[in-house]
Length: 104
Image (cartoon, rainbow, N blue to C red; front, side, top):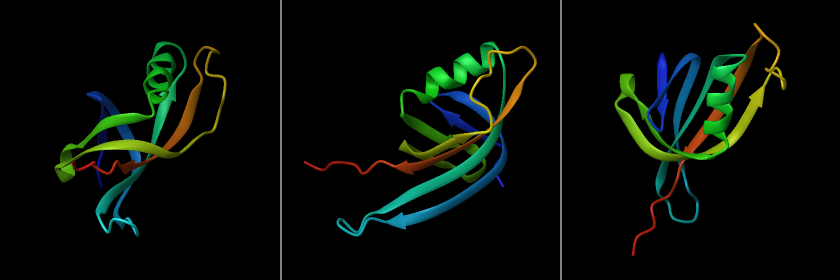
């Protein structure tokens, strides 16, 4: 199991990780799909992570499985919506799928 994922070179320590390959029924291309859980602390860390996630698409790297791709969010959830309170920790879950490369 992977212990860290990089999104646009921002390291995220993960507490749960799943990886699979999906086949696009239209193009028949195989696309990576990962899901992972991680903790986010209130304050600066919360701001950094939420600002990053607003971008919705990322350069994704999973060093332990040598996986790299351009991905986009397909599912996101959090246990808490207001991490502006001091000393709070939220559980985040993020699912990303590889973006299909356009060939031209």
